[in-house]
Image (tube, rainbow, N blue to C red):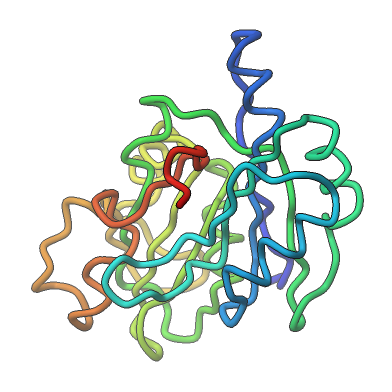
Length: 216
């Protein structure tokens, strides 16, 4: 399979007020796991005054999910950041900078849990397999050759499509019959280890853009 990433492209709001707010909010994908919050803020502060900036992490372990949000005061500064930072390579990763998706019920319950994948599959293979269902915000394989993955889609309906399309279906070219379900509904005891049981759980990560009131 190709190693190309399936780029996440947040949806836009239909209301003018939501669109205005959304144009100052950015989502940044494929960040190096080693990037600190301070370096993240400094990188984007070059292009304008920042209202808030944060990398999304697991509440318990502090593990970076590899993406974050930046909110500028001005839309023009957000646009400048996209023009200058989208596609740059950091630690062998090409980051993606784009407008953040708005907060709504449409983006809730967009996480799926996939088991019985081929043990040889990489994250890129999983992305390519599920990319036809919609924009993938994050994809992560659990453990070493476990055949288990978490996939976070941009919208709930995309996650639902993935379940309808792939649950109990054979992986193309193999005898592996996948099981696909919403991640939040998967019991912790079935996870591969204790720390992973909280990954991609909506109780642990907030996937909507940050607001200034959360900043110290």
